[in-house]
Amino acid sequence: MVSLVSSQGFTIWKDAAGIAGNIFALGLFVSPIPTFRRIIRNKSTEQFSGLPYIYAFLNCLLSAWYGAPPISSDNLLVTSVNSIGAVFQLTYITLFITHAEKSKKLRMLALLVVVLGIFAVIVVGSLHMSEFTLRHILMGCLSSAALVSMFASPLFVINLVIRTRSVEFMPFYLSLSTFSMSMAFFLYGILNFDPFIYVPNGIGTILGIIQLALFFYYKNTSGENSREPLIVSYT
Image 1 (cartoon, rainbow, N blue to C red):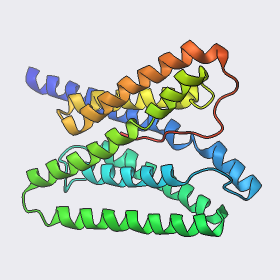
Image 2: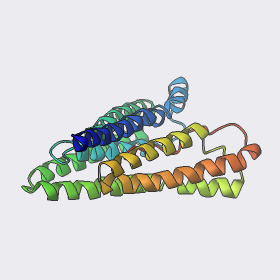
Image 3: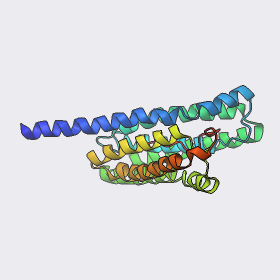
Image 4: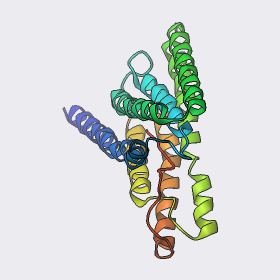
């Protein structure tokens, strides 16, 4: 009986961390909204790049598939947050394509088709693997690699902050959301004994702490926050 109660309590804490991660991720999902308000208002993508949204879309698809029952036995909270993230990213990509000039429009459409094709090949290929453990490890490695590379993307922003002594291009709430979400999923991964979740999110947590520390160190020398979110990351 004691063991059962302990197990239930452990599961509650794990689920709580996963739900918190889903909630904190909303801060990342909605962060590009000011950018797209500007794009819609001006009916132009100006100098903004659509590549971060394409990359984030692929990352969400890979992570959502990793958490799905055919790949993982107990990671539905990972699938839920990344499925929502994929919808947001696809919406942003659609808006970007709608308002982009012809050359950008065609390039973004081509990249979107490539991403969907890559994801389709990965899904079909993984389902053809008869061993569940092999499928889990393969998708875990792919989703972790994508997540680590995305969490590493703020390194150029960190370098910019140190070089310019300004946090103009590192919005506080974006950094806070990144740290909070990474920390929540780091705990979720630990409690779920899943290194494919806690390792990349542990790295994300460390980078989030660095960003917040730099923000408070340099905030008095900066103007208003960034014109465009420079990082979009999940789980």
